[in-house]
Image 1 (cartoon, one colour):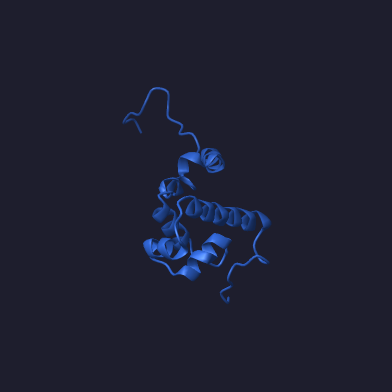
Image 2: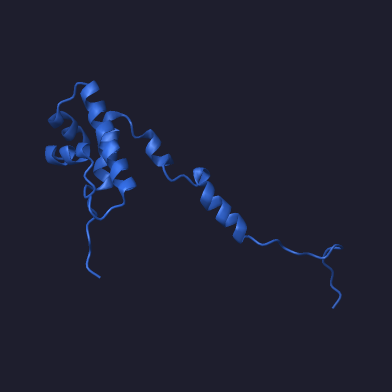
Length: 113
């Protein structure tokens, strides 16, 4: 199957909206810190063009670029909690439903056959 890149036309609307908002948040954080694009890009280890794509919420831009920019801004701490197993209520519920209960004799185990 040929590789397809995700884009605004192929992605669900919620995905587009979320990444767009993330990009806006990153741009706002940069502006509040009075950082120039080239300075933030250099600190994050990416090109200025990639930073512009991150701030635009471009879906084809790798997650590493987003995390690098968040790190450069000092905002990376919460990113590890995004898919945390402790916060995955649906996953926990499904896992619990699959677990069966063990049945053991009331008197415990013995060697009688």
